[in-house]
Amino acid sequence: MQGLPIGKVSNLLRSCMTKTDSPNLKPELVPHRFVARISFGYFAMALSHGVMLSFFPQWLAAQGYSAAMVGAILSAQLAVRTLTVPVISSLADNAKERVYVGVGLAIISLVLSLGYLLPQTFWLTLLVSLLIVPSWGGLAPLLDSFALSGQRRYKADYARMRVWASISFLTAGIITGYATGAFGIGLVPWLATGCFAIMLGSQFLLPKLGPVRNKQGKLDFGFGGASGALKRYAPMALASGLIIGSHGYFYAFASIHYASIGHSQGEIGLLWAFSVICEVILFFYSKRFIQRFAPETLMIIGGAGALLRWLVMPYAQFFAPSPLLADFALQSLHALSFALTYLATQRAISENFKDSETGKALGLTFFMSGMVFSVTTLISGPLYQHFAISGIFVMGGFVATGLFILFGTLLRTNPLRL
Image (cartoon, rainbow, N blue to C red):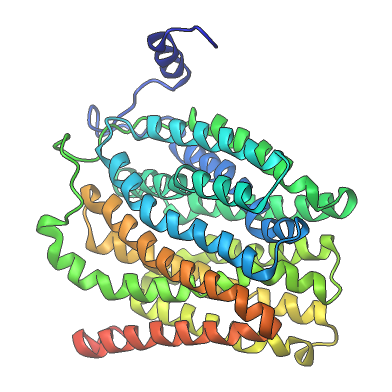
């Protein structure tokens, strides 16, 4: 495309998009195959996460980096994500069409992912890892914004759309596990680049919903009239961040730990996949019970699952006939520690904020969890280096703090909601 005028490139991109079906023009009309298009967007976006979250730490270790260096790279990524994703969420909310933001983010992610295919040094790996985070990390909340808008405007089921990200993660984890077992862990960046290409293609299929805000123009990070809602939601955002962020140690070193105790690459992929199967089951059937409980109560249940998971993991082999069966049993708790906590958070946002404030509420949520993820991942390197998997006990302290905040909030505001 070298030499092609900028205007023609813009027109080419626009021509690949579907015809505008913004509810701002015809509120009574649901965009054509809205649920299917958002679901595929989630599926394509999460493929790269299934490859990188599960096996990127192993690939880093294969480059000769120490546990502390692995933790530093992953923590730095999360810190950049924490600082940039809220900005991207707000920019997307202020865009005339969020879909164009998604296309731009996907293009940048794909181009930067090629950096992992070059001969690696620690500083090159760190540089690529930091540069790719804003665009790659910004796509998840962007899709959440699409899905939550659809839930409000067209009564679409958020969980039924979001579940395809879990199915995608599951699929990518299994394929990557067996592929790296057959061809080596060096295959990881090649698989990731392929996933980024699929992700880019999916962005062209997203519906045009028009601007989120009634008034466009000035970028506004304040909550204005939603200050009361923010005051109610802030403790939940912090508790959610502590519970979800406590997964930092596990995400950084679970695959390395599994390999160290003798699990094959295929088994590691299956362990990651099984946790997502449990997550998928919860997403599919959550509608039957999730409306019966307050978001705070659901998050307390999720936090209890996380606390049990981290405290038992170092002793898992004593609770099952084999270490593999024990690890499968513990992975089932992912449905509580992550999925239920995540759904409780989204429901709290939906209950407390109007459509025009959703992006900023999501940005606040990602900021909270990102801060905790950065800290837990940074300390996970030295902890794993000195204590191996037993260092995960420290994550229980983060979860306990989140539970304390939730109980305190309920007792102070409305104990009957528990």
